[in-house]
Length: 202
Image 1: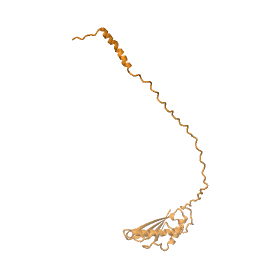
Image 2: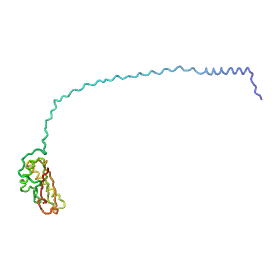
Image 3: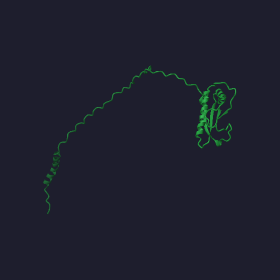
Image 4: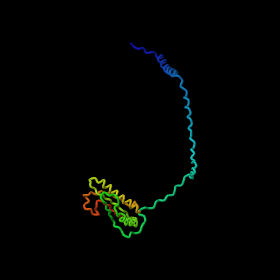
């Protein structure tokens, strides 16, 4: 079956209606919206005020009238070596002197002041010298604690006597030691187990 071709006039009429239908379809769309309102105006930025750069006044000097003044103190005179406090002794003692003690005795032996007199006179005439007190005590046990205690008591008693005679205690050096009887050997004065050696040091 063959399709029938419309006449030319009908075809022309259809072509003329196509643009018209498009324009009508376009005109059917609603009106375009009006221009949007302008954005709200921003709040102005606050400019801070200029800071005050002036310095406050300097405070005055506080009243110190109620503060008591500190007492004036003087430093004590130098105790060592100091100046000579006595004349040169007529008899210069030896650099080392020895005091012998009975075993177990703590008090000063007789004749101690006669030995100390020359030593004290020399130390007073020579302030730069010092005196060592080396005390020894005999020990018969393996633990010489008691002997060392006795030696220390001997040295302390001798030190107190020298201070009474006018010597500065800062110039006295004290040592205490226990001596075994087996190591003592013969009881010579220089090696006797119960003694105190007085040694003068420059």
